[in-house]
Image (cartoon, rainbow, N blue to C red; front, top):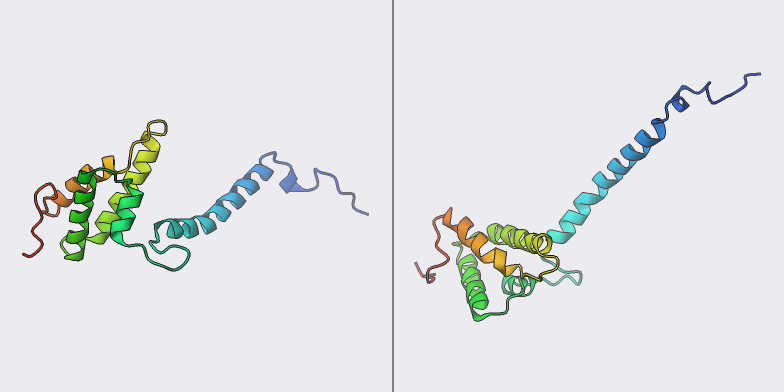
Length: 139
């Protein structure tokens, strides 16, 4: 009859075995779930299946309050609808501004618009667009 002791099982000899197994299991679990959460957070379609307009997304998500905020959002929407400004550029800047406002000012409730406007102006300049000038959508 073979007597089993804790030393007869080589995988139990190391005190790190349980730690390694737990960490690798956690990593695999996270790798499976994170893409699902990332897709849900960037999807513009809400849970009822209705799509939010770009204007409403920017107005509510950036916490626009001033006339200048609303005129800039209108300008961005016009340029996106005219095909001059890529929607992906606007969406990525929108998400960046929301993250930055949450990280940089947890106590001071800075609106994401404070980061969105200069960020989008700078990124659009790289495409040859000047968002700080009046819009000419017709040409």
